[in-house]
Image 1 (cartoon, rainbow, N blue to C red):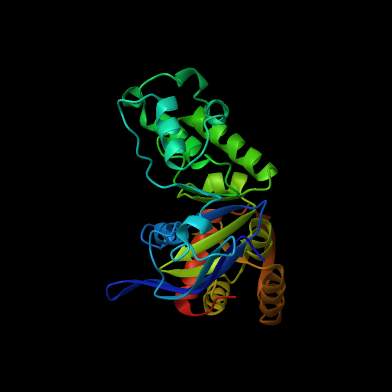
Image 2 (tube, one colour; image 1 turned 135 degrees about the vertical axis):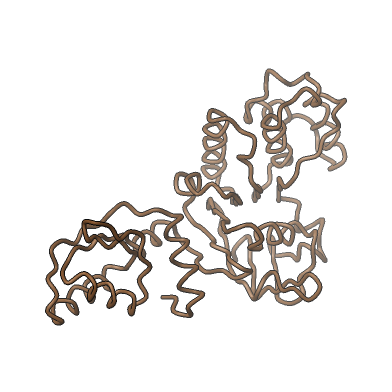
Length: 303
């Protein structure tokens, strides 16, 4: 059984449905990017995993238990960073020590966690003197108390400078090497491309893609096509639901398609007496793929 399971989950706030029958599973050793626009349902998903909200229908299992009705047991091995809160008049060490005591944990791992997140030298400094980025690092250490098997981070990169982001990436890679599940919710898609092995795209409360990032890039390739007559080719591509990214003076059309779709496009255009001058595969962009997936779902032609 997977360590984290969502099965046909529906969540409402009043009359508004914010999660619409979503299902996914995550196994240990996965680094998953939970991505989507603001208001898509990402934070609600995290709060459901944390047992802070109750589903309206469907099922969630964290380590085989319901995180809402079996909160303590389900979350024994889950560390979550949403909006870290600390006592500003206590030091970094004292904050983690206080939380460790509240969780019934001993304090032996605190120093190693502070070193892990790059706050070893700030151990005895009051949190009131910390920058926002330093508080984010301390929040990661807080999420790792008790050596959880599942780590969920909501926008962990906020407030970090470029070196801080590099350190965060290295830390997350180490957690995955330890066979932990790491889920990061972020709007920085470059971080997702660099780090994640899997992604969950959420838009308007629906999952529009869930799976391996590598497979997504294989499924959605970016092509540039040049040919004549341009207007005829353009009309055909519009009819086949291609989202144009560029149409310029060089008569180049750029769009996303699978290899099979691209073969069918070329064959059809040739049969329609169009002249194909050039077909070139370009580097894919995750943000453009996301836009294409959203548009296809909106048009009811997702494939």
